[in-house]
Length: 128
Image 1 (cartoon, rainbow, N blue to C red):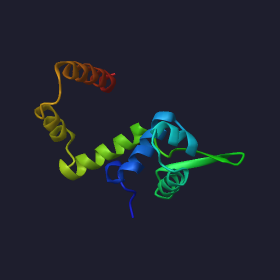
Image 2 (image 1 turned 120 degrees about the vertical axis):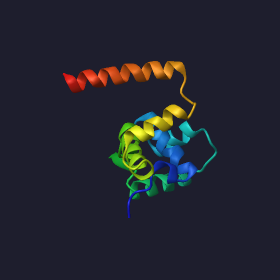
Image 3 (image 1 turned 90 degrees about the horizontal axis):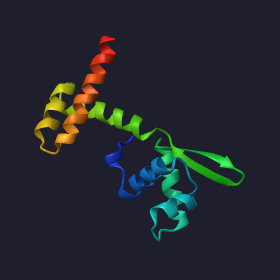
Image 4 (image 1 turned 30 degrees about the vertical axis):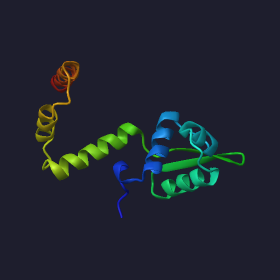
């Protein structure tokens, strides 16, 4: 069975993954502190273990303590998810997906300026 995508995880699971992306790595106590909630240590430990079993996290030992980190970076996960979305929803066409983003109305003038610079850089890279 394929691993769930980020949006398919429960809200606490997503929060834990996001927290570890932000921290880089952390113990159960680190995650608890970063979440700033009154959740129990055992709740967070259970979530971390389930996320590891599902392929989202890895851990290493420091003495008797486990230090957790995301198995993949936010960028790797984003690229993978975007590729799946483009394949499933836009028939494999990045241009169709891009056209929808442009027409969506959420992009500001500054976003368009940045996109133009990114496209120019990519064009130079491809030509160069």
